Image 1: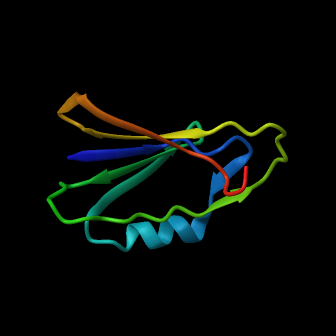
Image 2: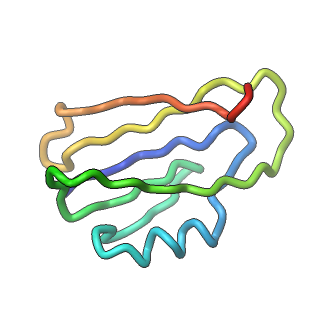
Length: 91
């Protein structure tokens, strides 16, 4: 099992439409939101490229917005971890 852990940018939350679109993908087994972190559970990954779009909604205006992180790891081998960061377009 593979987990994609998305920390939304400060002041943002995942939209309900985004959750629905992700849940309709056959590769996605489960989605959890805990302490504003989104966990996307996948049964497995293969060599095929996958694109996941997570729509966020700004609920609080935050100045000097810092990049947020996305972590991808194997549930059974969390030491094999890939970390990336993202930021708001134009910031």
